[in-house]
Image (cartoon, rainbow, N blue to C red):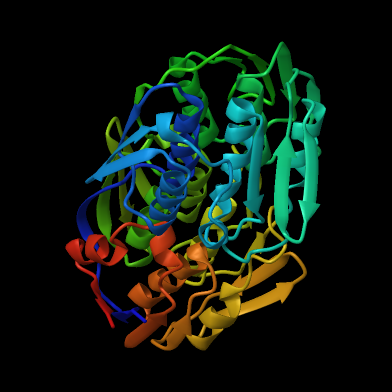
Length: 415
């Protein structure tokens, strides 16, 4: 299996461009199956999760063409309402097929989805939404099946603002009869991007970006062309990389309103951030101040940047606290960081981070964002680091080693 070999100590300088957002691309790829005609999607990142979802869609009978960062999907040939079992286990986003197929064809089947093992990730809120709209739901031996002769709009309150559940209910409601209201809905930018695409296709959706979404069902949707928004988590990772190496990097193709919580924390740490219409410049001058971080649903600090931020906090001159409130098992990277010399103490859902001198070591990736954190730690470590099980990283970062090398990092992908 491949691994990253990193010789730490280099300062990152230059310019880097951010790809389209993985967490917007995946539901939008699924959304194309709601249409009666082909769609063209631009700025689709070249990632393992994208490849796997495209393969799922192909096996269901749709025609899928990929070229660079462009994907064309014609759903007319759909002849199966069931996802490939092995492919579905490889990515969390396979569950979007449920809402799409239920809305368009009245039935869908999939095995329980896979993805990173960062905690309990049930789909009960998704199924609650489907039931409220009139679907019959069954879960047997790891297979989820949903069926409905007719979906009818209803008011649905989510106990937690789940992004996945909000999206799946939005899919099902888009072709349902009457009005659906989702209360305590997720507000993430990727969900707004999806809603914009559905609206162009002909859906009637209001309130996306707030905690109340209203959907008036329509008879049909038409395929359209759409460009995916930039990936705020990829952008945040490279911003932290610039700061942790004492660098000067312009991160291009960033919507700064999507990463206000990160920018605020970096300002608080003493990092210079210059916002521009086309991106942000990150400059680290002097010692970093310690800060406390608490992850929250959007617009709070993203859980997907928690592990990367923790590495940056090891380089401050004081003690910091990170509190994880989104996923209960998202500190698995800590043991690997300790191999590199990080002084971190876990107490329940909180981590105490003290100033640390990091040294190169052999470490193993446990999940997507943990992998990014270990790479960042390698960049600032003294000596050589070897990061294994990088297939997790390649689920969410396209060519991360090439991008970092273009900024001056000594990083190589080796067998």
